[in-house]
Image (tube, rainbow, N blue to C red):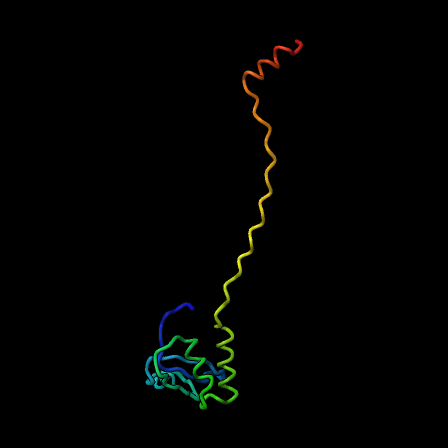
Length: 119
């Protein structure tokens, strides 16, 4: 996850006809959501401060979030934010052995070859 913040309050609210999962550190967040036009605000206090993903998994089984709209918002959040499995690293392909480069001609060998060369 992108953040290490912990939350004591989690729930759902409806804004512009769409339900979304909401997080807070205090139940008074209800007032702020209502002030900004949210409807059907349902927040639950959790036993302890937890990450967002853990908070959503906790409210998923609560009775006040059992309706279809809340469960759909919760399921969508869990699907989008599910921890990704680390990518398996592919085993490196065995390196092909390079063909041995021909040995460099030494000065003595070059001179010997030149002595026998017809001019």
